[in-house]
Length: 404
Image 1 (cartoon, rainbow, N blue to C red):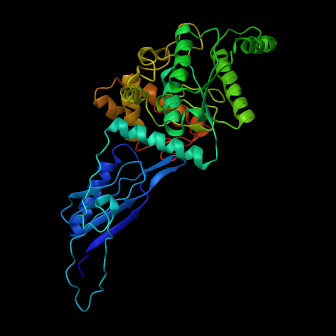
Image 2: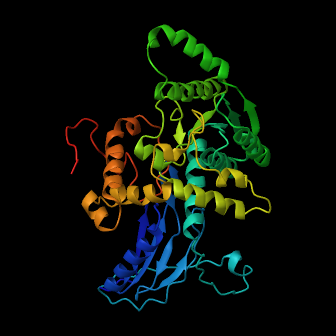
Image 3: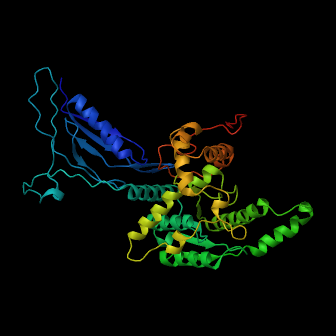
């Protein structure tokens, strides 16, 4: 018995490049079965996963005949070719297509036109996935409003922009928490992002709180020198503030850490990691820059200040601090992380591709050593083939060390 068509009702989660992989797999199946495949995919967010829609119709030769919109609910109409008359041994299935006003006035006899929705480019696709995943997580869990700690940096600016695009400006609040190390430039940019987005904006300075902590801890810290402890203390004070706003007003705290930071442990437990949903936790830092530039190009006036994008990344927890004090440059780090985390490549394999062996080993050690931090982090949206947690499950406790 020959199939007239195969209907595949699916819930296939998104990651970068998934649409092409999906179309290729369905095309091979259509050619093998020599039939049409009608592939209906789910749309929406569920915890870490985003389902991207883009339902498909493929012909018996594997050719794409129709495609629905990505990341939006859509109705895709397709008229199958007339089936051959069934034999007495075959079950006759009648498929009827009603007259749809969208394809011609009712009763006009207008012909149904197959549509192939355009495929989004890579960066636009990721932005749409993040926006949909954030919107559905907030709405399905009953939150009326979210809050973002605006540091004046690119990560928090992108998260706030995504939140406004997903939820509307009236459902987003920003809070800046300057310390003695905060530059005037970052303070200005934090305020400008809030103004450009039209969101509620709060300022809660932390210098006096930090000084109080240091004074109270002075007896216990006697005889020691300032180190990363004091840096982390500032991040944890800020974490307390955003969680206080969450408790008081019922707002969901959106954390702003990216995949590069979480991979290497360049983040503070109970500090900048404090919150309920980690929007960009699977987004490498280099892609954060790409997303910010792409979003600015969609508006007549840039939403994210160009200075925020152009400024060297810094946590501003000590004088003249830069991310490169602790990490390799992101254009070096991210390709190593992608190979180590998503492709499971060894240090030797990466060195064979031209990466400096010492840098590769250093990055791999940071990734392995910081599993305990990631295990305590908020859930966030998956956009790569292998995200931390759901896809990459590693033990915290082990004696293995790759020092070769």
